[in-house]
Image (cartoon, rainbow, N blue to C red):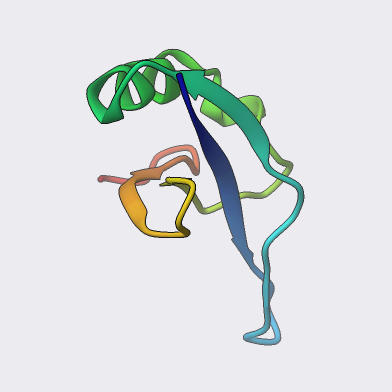
Length: 73
C-alpha cells in the first residue's frame, strides 16, 4: 500500500490561494488512489474549495478534480 494525499485549493476574492488540510488515502496503486478520490464526497471536502489534488508520496500531482458547484471540469 502507498500513501496518497487528497488536498484542496481555495482561491480567495483577493487573489490569494489557500491549501487547507489533506485527507490521507492508502491505495494499492495510482489507479486505486484515483478511484478512491473520485468516490470521496469532494463537494464536502472543504468549504469553498475550487479544486482537489491527488498527490503521491513524492509530492507529484497525480490527478486534479474541479469541486466547486456548477463548475465544468
